[in-house]
Amino acid sequence: MKKQFNRMRQLANQTVGRAEKTEVLSEDLLQVEKRLELVKQVSHSTHKKLTACLQGQQGVDADKRSKKLPLTTLAQCLMEGSAVLGDDSLLGKMLRLCGEAEDKLAQELIHFELQVERDVIEPLFVLAEVEIPNIQKQRKHLAKLVLDMDSSRTRWQQSAKSSGLASNLQPSGAKADALREEMEEAANRVEICRDQLSADMYNFVAKEVDYANYFQTLIEVQAEYHRKSLALLQNVLPQIKAQQEAWMEKPSFGKPLEEHLAVSGREIAFPVEACVTMLLECGMQEEGLFRVAPPACPGGLGGCCLAQGAGVLWRPARLAGRGCPGRVLAGSAQFSSLSRSLWMAARLSGASGHSSPV
Image 1 (tube, helix red, strand yellow):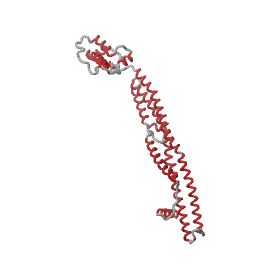
Image 2: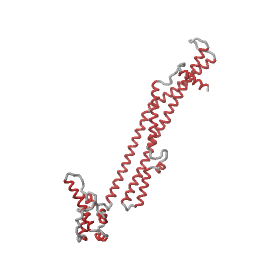
Image 3: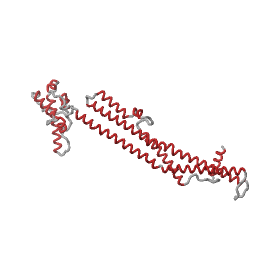
Image 4: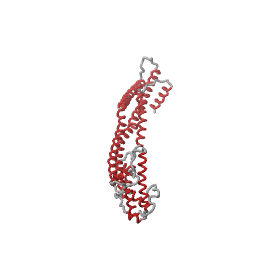
């Protein structure tokens, strides 16, 4: 209590200018002290925002982190959908391939977040919450020691004045010796603490390159994560395209003519050939087949079967027996022919670079 009282009295005297005040830090160290506070603010803010970017739960192992990851949930949903639809359907195969890809992406994301947490987030936390606060704590301790030293010097000087000695003589006696010894011990403690604080501050300045490497590491880890994710996606894309190309049932309407002929291996578009064949077999007795304008899109059972392409078994009797009138077939043929005619007209008028629709 007595030491605390002496500190408060010395601080009050220094505030009103009645006592000598010793500078705690040099001008260079004062600049370092300001930079310490700025770096602490930036590190704390960056740590907070970077932690918010993590999708997984921070501080848990990979297995627990994976269970609550959105990508893992999506992968499970896709795999469950694939199991429901089965691999005998195109959609089921697509869901299985995409589910496997999303699960691999989730594993890469978990590895990425763990590495960022270990190499960037934790060092930033130590810098903002441990290293810099320790230096600031030591700075406050030095200020108290300097205040104790100034208080001891003031009391020793007051003791010298009260003894009535000349200014060029040293005070004597037990009390004066005790005050002088207290002053010297306080000065020694100040020097030891100041040397340690100076070393810590200059060490902080020297380690600024190491602190900057945290952010270089962040970019390098992000780049590696995106490279691996891109490689996974590039590996699965050919498999997805191969499944779609190998699928037999392909739509015939709304596709470029060149693509339709290349896929089906035909010289004449399948809708045109199928409709003409059907009309020759069972529609020539109807009147006004081509008098009605073609519909905007082919309809009925005939249109649905034609839309599936050459992969569907074409049975004229099957369609005829289900009430597929000749006008529907004629309209389908007209629809396909009209689409190609419109494309040819657009190309002749200058709209080049488009593929001919079926």
